[in-house]
Length: 334
Image (cartoon, rainbow, N blue to C red; front, side, top):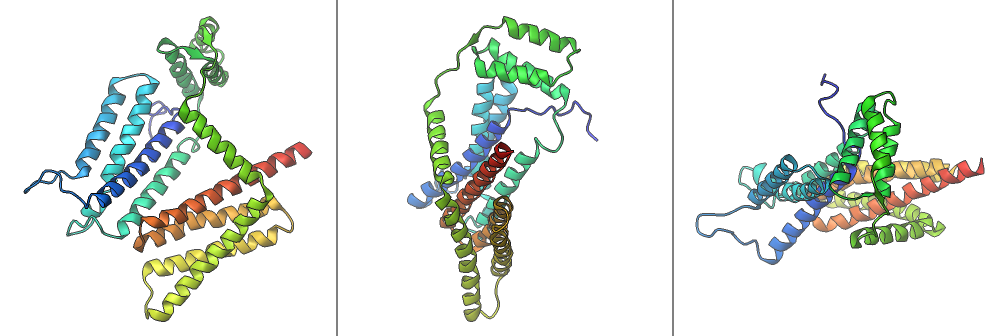
């Protein structure tokens, strides 16, 4: 067992992990697009080739040096983005290091990279939830929040979060008492106007809520789930007529699609009694498709299948919103 104070969790770390994952995914796509349109150039010439895995190592090293050298929040943001870019450049060369002939174009690489990102996402979601935050962790996070007031102006949102953290701490702790006193003396500025990126993100979220709020959309989602399941089953069944033996990925697509389809049917049946329960089964069906079926699809397919993944991710968002909306409605009805 690790000592209790060996790892102190950062309550605000979700945005850093998201920066890392998004930057890594974007990095892979940009590298693949650049290499495709430039006919895979060889950097270095002659007997030398500077593989982009080296650039990945450089960016990850830069991220580590920034984290080890600087204390402010903006440095952590920059490091999370640089680290993601570096990891994307590194993992994109996976095919070279799992094949005996250093085959960058090894087809299952896409599926392996996909499952790595799925696991990273699941781990990042699990980290904050495996154990409730301790009073010590809330105290350290409050100190980190107040520390920013010495670097930047302390705004209302930061002060509010710092006070919330201190409420979860031991009120008899002298450090907690001192920090509460400091908060009463620190000058607080009004919240700054949102930046371009924040405005864009809020606009997308607002648009998403408007779309998801429509009753038509959830019906479209149900039709989409049914058609997607039938399409894959028909596709594999047709393939079996021309192939005497189906591959591992073909069987994987077939069985995972059947499993997803079963939950769609259960959801349709549950829809007669409870929309919340029906949405829960639809959500399980989408998760099976994202975590299992898409993996087997990407084993032999190309990057264009990411569009199918995107459709399923959007479907998951719509279902999550529908579940949240119905839950709030039931609470308000009580």
